Image 1 (cartoon, rainbow, N blue to C red):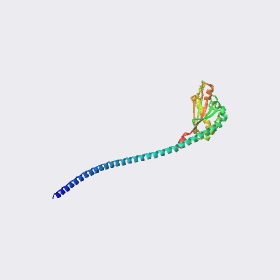
Image 2 (cartoon, rainbow, N blue to C red):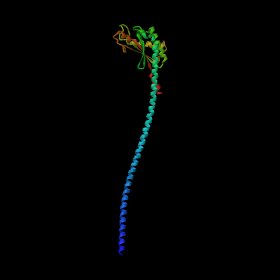
Image 3 (cartoon, rainbow, N blue to C red):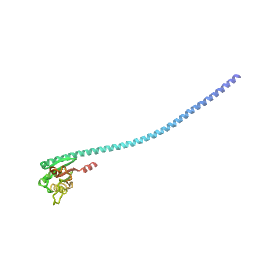
Image 4 (cartoon, helix red, strand yellow):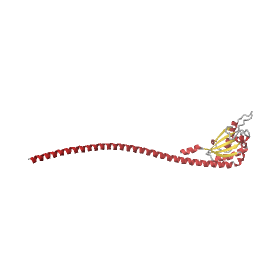
Length: 252
């Protein structure tokens, strides 16, 4: 009987201990499960944030990629245009050299009589001293002056893309009293005479020609000396490339 009671007590104790251990384990497992759920929620939020950031990065990449493609296309277009421009300039420089050589050869017989041909800043200048072209105070061409314009006209007709400016110059010495003319008027008259001669005698297109007079306002030498004044009395024929045609070619 006593043995039965002891056995019952042990069984009751075992059952009590078993119940206690199961409750403790449950709490531990539940705590771990709660932590895992919390971590899972945190990871899910982080995952959503990362997905959003990845989408933004992809959008930015697409935008940058499109901008780069546009920039690349623009650069390629600019390079092609630059190459066209450089080719045009190279051809223009070759053309100017051709014209200068042709003019220098044509005016060789007049070089000792006051005609000079040179290039400056992409333009060709033909300088003709007034003692070859005119009598003192006159705008009427001498015979030698008429002949000297022949090679110029030939070059102009051979190279129709060149625009032409004819500019008359004088020294600073005023006309004598009683003469109804001044240096500015004389220089303009002389320039007009050259233009009329190129058109009327040598068939140069008048649309390409511009005449102007500067009088004493454009000296290349000192007007206080006789030699300087002689150099200043001149007619300039300036051959200028038609840059507008080149720019239009580039736009096309």
